[in-house]
Image (cartoon, rainbow, N blue to C red; front, side):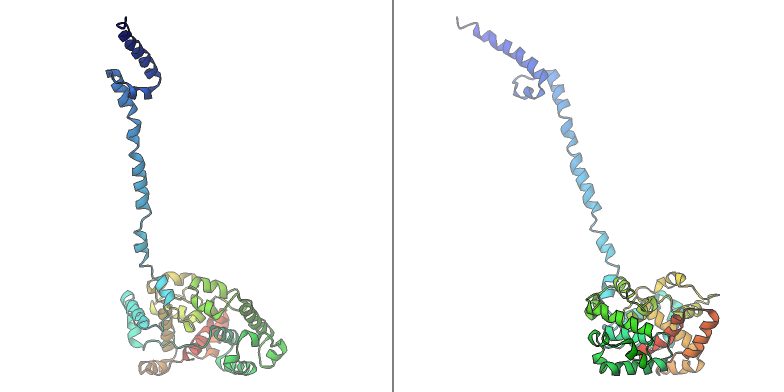
Length: 339
């Protein structure tokens, strides 16, 4: 009687077949795999074949993260330049070597003049105060007013925001400072007192940030900032595009038919990067030598440099309707150079 029982497994196999047809996953539990099911398995295994595509996508992302641009970006010297001033050891020599190699015309000018000398100018606050006081003034008048202003503050060490803010417009007018300039001086001192500006912050800022922050001060424009960055902070890559002396020097150096516009200066002097401050310094030397023949011999002998008389340049400016700051830049930049 126990014999019929073996006939039951075939029936259960049929039921398994029907269930396995509806549920593909049950095929794995079957001990007998028919040919049609093998094809099913091959079909079922096709989705896993897509799995390798995922790692490929991941691999594509990793090269795109390109750790390589960072080395390529490393040659961009701005981080190094902003960290070093022209007074750092070897930086001026590197600037002159670079300018010689990229600009043969400038190289001949470099050979004709001694290298520039950059000296410290006390504090950034004092330099900015001096910049405002000398605006649109001949050197002699500026020296007189600056001396009286320093005396009013108790000496150069006393030219600090705390001593400048209490000075009234009437007191400043008595020493020759106009009401408008008095407001400029107070605005600068107020921004220092409020913490918007500070000597340490100015020294550590990059060129773009510094330009933005200083032009927020009333009475300090782009030209004043450029002169401050070159002559007081000794930044290496500043091009004063609004400076008449630099523009005139570029015209002479490259024998241009007309004075280059400020908007053209960036393109013309691009090759000087990252030492456009030094290139600009040689433009002042060039116009000085051309404008004052007797100064050429003095320059070649290493004597102190002198700019053309400011009054003559002011008359030229009035006839050409140029920005008076651009004209005064020649006398003022030399003043800072000699300080």
